[in-house]
Amino acid sequence: MSNYIRPKVSGATIFFTVKLAERGSDMLLREVDVLRWSVAEVMARKPFKIDAWVVLPDHLHAIWTLPANDHDFSTRWKEIKTGFSRKVRRIGPRTLSKETKGEAGLWQRRFWDHHIRSDADYQGHLAYCWGNPVKHGLVKSAQDWPYSSIHRDIRLGRVPAEWSGKVPDGAFGE
Image (tube, rainbow, N blue to C red):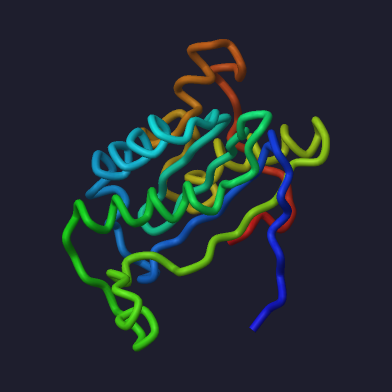
């Protein structure tokens, strides 16, 4: 068991990797509307900015910026995962611990987070989100993946439409 303590930085910008418990599942794509609903529900109660988001079959990556007076991203993820699990009404493989706590077992209990430290760090993680479907061989071009914030970012002029999909090397939580 790790003694990791999550940083508590108000207004932080944070990169996340959040995974389903069952690797190889395609549930996030089949239930992407439920995921969107769950995120919207939490955002309505506990606002945050979505800088980037990409949903893959069994995991997702996101970059959030929290409000200036708020550091609590863990509760937001817990509520998103709980809302999703309740809405899809499925039970995944559960350990005794998950069963005892009433968890549906759809998600890995923990998630990976990285506090963004510089503009270069931010740009690298944005590119990682946009290019992740290419990295996993799901599409040839990042723009071909429908479950990505790259479409919003192209529309807003933040990334060129012909962006290559090349992602930086590094440990990004997969």
